[in-house]
Amino acid sequence: MEHITDTYIEQERPTAVTLGNFDGLHLGHRSLIKLTKQFAEEEGLKSVVFSFLPHPMLVFKKKEDFALIMAPSEKQHTIEQMGIDTYIEYPFDEEFASMSAEDFAIKLIFGKLRCRVLIVGENYRFGKGASGGYEMLQRLGEERGVKVIAVPSVLYEEERVSSSRIRRCLIEKNLEDANKMLTVPYFILGTVAEGKKLGRTIGFPTVNIIAHPLKLFPPNGVYATKTLYEGKYYYGVTNIGKNPTVNGTKKIVETYLFDFDKTIYGETLQTFFYKFLRSEQKFSGVEELQQQIAINAEQAREYFASEEYAHWKSDSE
Image (cartoon, rainbow, N blue to C red; front, side, top):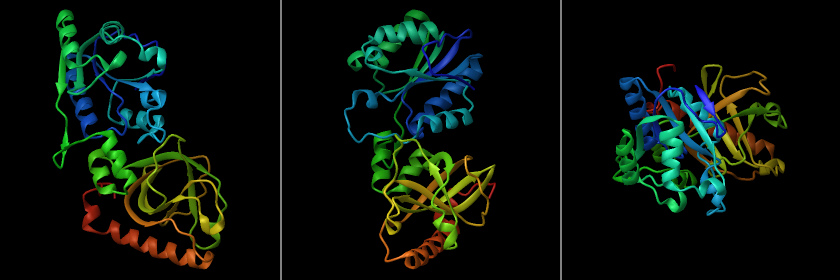
């Protein structure tokens, strides 16, 4: 997959393009990308996903606590898996945000990208003051022989699927609904770092992941998780928090993997979150912590053997 992160986006071949922020790559986003790929294949075009970096909300700072469902590296990883030809993360700043909607459409999308088919969500807004929308794109497209298609919103339990709705679910520890709207369980992709190695001394060796600082984490606590390492999945439990029992002060993502005993510092893991087990708490000592980890591990094993998890079970397991 071609990955562009600067303003040099010119394409030699005509393209089918979809526009958006695509945070989380949820059901709605995937319907746009699927249709873009379909038109690209049918009409001999190059498929393009056009997004922005950083997310516009981080530039406008309308929400102090705004965080990303997917870090940039996670979004790139997922889009590549979806089979897109070119993924553009166009530099977004206040100067770019002042560009008129018509200039954005005519100069960048229809011009530099040589777009022949454009796929957008029915509510997509763009350009200075969010003045552009489907109607404008359709008019400009007709003038230039570009097919512009608006895709209706995707509903989940009779409500529109959106990144903001998924963020609320994650914050409320409602992983079941968040994951169904994401289609792939919420995950953290990160590098394994060296920790305090306390887990090894109490019989529960863990791996610590360094995740992107702008990543949205579910609330501190313990979760039933599944981790992908070198093409193989490992069940486990993951703690998000500061380890108050041993006077921790920095937030960490720490996973105890069942049936796993390797030293993998510096390597990349992808950990998927399925079920909230308990909130973070401070125990009287290491012995009580050890007992609680054993309880949580058993709870996770029961979950992964249950019908509740069967929906997610892959053929590779």
